[in-house]
Length: 341
Length: 294
Image (cartoon, rainbow over all chains, first blue to last red; front, side):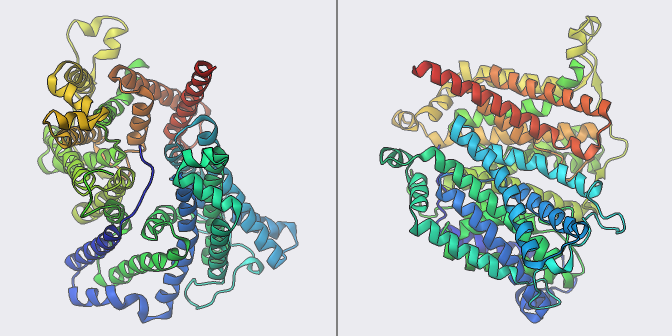
């Protein structure tokens, strides 16, 4: 069975166009004031700092999870556990950060590095398990990463509703992290923060490693043709593991950024969607690192536009899963496709 | 106990049978999960509109078929990637059920139907036989339906000409095409069949509960998919794996009951059980392959 997921340029246009048209049609059809709603769908994200900042913040997180998905794809693996890995990263980052309140020493930069590092390691460990199962026992990493992630989510849900919950608040979340660890807000009142610098630097460094270093080269070689790579002396099973490990690391990192930059605490369901949307963004970018930036912006715009239109339509629907579904269904479509691959 | 295991296994058997049928035709159907979910929702929609469980069942089959048709067109006609399109079906199912639930029932939560009863069937004579009576009698019509579907599908694939042609499609579509047959036709029909079985599996979940709960498919499509992976193209083996997963889930749940663990955690049990099953079978398979190789 082929695991190569080549989005097609016609598929990218068709899927994004269809996702835009369908959400637009649904929102306008259910709205009591269709014209105003249509206006807010297209212009809403740019009308004020709040929505624009949130759009950019959303994109900065999607760049990281999208890159995580792309790295796995480039190594020839498919990480379907991004949701759970990101969620776990957020909880671990929050716990480390909150723990520093009790530890007494709340040193900003070191604390933030520790929290983000721990989040990345947690996500990497989860991705690495699926990678190791694939590398050693040939157990399908697509299914195992999904199962592991889906098992983790209810456990984290439970932890945030009980043991780790801030008992003084009404939300199902951890206590707020100390302010010295928070990433600087760039466009208040939006959630845009200096995490966007971290996310783009991560992408640039990762892209350099992928394209300019030997391990990166061998990883891509493993992904584009395992048999050929093996006969060329590449230890391909190692790169199946590494691809999933790095993918998990990046997802955990995104979860950490979500806490330190966006929310300042880990909330139940807080990172929901970052995993699935990361896959969509990676597909739109055709797994090319630099193309992830525009892809994440387009996807984040679509999500923000849906929200701003919904705020003005008087009727609230959660259309994010519909958008994801339409994009996934159509992105690999070959309209003028040959009869066989 | 066995009675409950059979009840838990019913939706798994139905979905796995559909999944195996598409695999035999050469199409891995990742979208089982979504087709179960739309079936569960459509069943409640149909039952609440008419008060009849049978109408709910038919609506579930129709909804599953509709999603299967979308999947078939996108994968076979538009040549999309199987995995990505299958995930799209699952995501679209979540989105469509949540949106329709908001629009039609004004809730994103539980939709329950009052006064809905799915009758239990006691089979005369068999009912009084110890053990066997407990296993086969006193279920809703879904359990015997699932068994009939499995047996019928197995007989069809093994003994009918069309069934053999379907298998041939999965092995080498060029041979089928060279014989003047259309491979896509068997694939479309297999996918539609999986839509019907998954739709019914969803109905079994929601009608027996008398309510639709968001994401109530709860990973059953994935578990069925793993059963198809592990069962290696044989209906008996796939059904046995489905029963095994059901038994393990029952065991884990009753263990949880005695330990008084919170209910949220119960949601992760089926995934963990399936993952452990996959790892164990995978490790055994690898060990066997190594022994053969030396």
